[in-house]
Length: 395
Ligand code: ADP
Image (cartoon, rainbow, N blue to C red):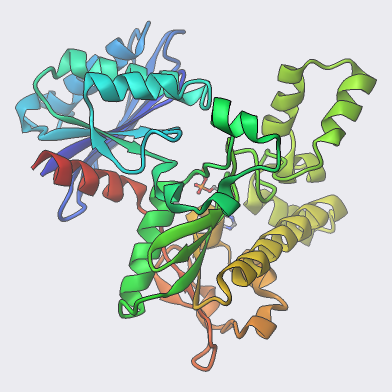
């Protein structure tokens, strides 16, 4: 089936038009500055990119612009929007309401709306994306795919926070976890590569600009590092990861910050960017560290150390580990970071093969033949998962 995938943000809308079986991408692009002025960047493999300024007061105009360019006789890839068999939407927060992808109905929209307090920045935008598609393609089936859904198999001891229980009961405050579509894709792929043995214990390291780890037993998530929001877990490009919440009280009192200012610092100015003062981009940090920048080196050391600690924690939680998977921008591309993370994990039975670890952006086993734990690089493909879910629910 030909599936259009939509990832709507507050002022942006990413799209990818692809085949759910072959994985072939026909076209993809991005609408930016929605609500301000509007710009569309459209990419078709083998052709020059198209960049157009188009007025986009709301997501509806952005969606109409995407439809127009997809059917444009010169820039487009289809003759009519009828060739779009279904639309798959990436939705950030499914709260306790969604444990899997589902067809979009009015009840589903109402449930996504009920999850807005849990995902206040993303869920309203995701809903706008759905509404915009309903407007321009009223007869095309739509599917919602949730970033949280894969993690809903976690047991209560993994998802409960040690807060008074009433906040869980009354307000659904708990660990949810994100990047679920990526964790689901790479763990399924790892199980396939390892011959589909039952009971496999896998630790997924999705290391990108945002990073999260998950512990997966027999294909089901049993723990993950992000929490109620994507702010928790390991340090990230600009997010703190886990810190003592009393740090916030101290800083807010001393500098007179309100909660929003403080959380903005935690989300946008912290992580490896905050420690290094150089960049949130790991390539810049590696370059700066090579040139002797000590804070860039410290940021990289801190990141690798916290990822390694989570691997140790998840091995303990699962009573061992059979495979460790690296994925996303840093996990797929940085041999240095993979080596740094794996340093000292020999006690777990995980031995990295320095030669095999030189790969970039391709599927590979990077552990030695005698390593008890198989270490893998698996490029993630969230779009393909969304396309497959959408096709399966619309056939
Ligand atoms: P996002 O979370 O935005 O989807 P990605 O998964 O695309 O992020 O990861 C982006 C990160 O990957 C950036 O910090 C970038 O520096 C890093 N990255 C990409 N290529 C390399 C590389 N060759 N070496 C080190 N880091 C890399």
